[in-house]
Image (cartoon, rainbow, N blue to C red; front, side):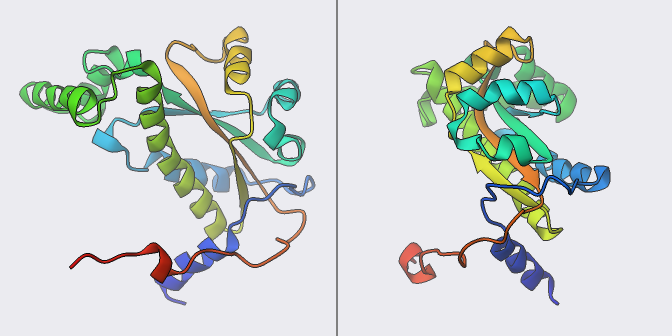
Length: 222
């Protein structure tokens, strides 16, 4: 089988699994592989404005249940349950400790390059995308970056026969407050973008994958 066909097969295999088989567990090696594909994912300016919480604590899962209407079957059955965090405005300003650490120590830019890069990023935030008008715009931009990592993790999981389900059905403010009260997150720095469940399907999908045709989705401009 060609590499291209293997990738297409993974996309066909993946579906939003609502109920997982609780008798099957993901191996540490496979889960580390999934997380690594998230870590290696692209992000705008290479700033990786996300963090991933792996919720192994069963009590915390139970406390999330009444706040997450979209995860009522995934929380109790998924082998791995993730909360995807994205950074808020203050930690993404060009002069913030996070951005300065990212460009100077993670990306290892020379001092003069780092200075020009952060100035360019500041112009992007303020002018190109007009993100500094309010706090939510920056968080939403960071969330779009986090979704790239989520997509890659779901596809890589499907490629090795592991199922997943992305979840947005939850009370964002209430979940953030719960995590802050438990000192899991600093709510000034991070917000909750999504949840993501992994495991093995309890049942096959009820129908084949339905999508619009390429002809409908794609318009070529000559």
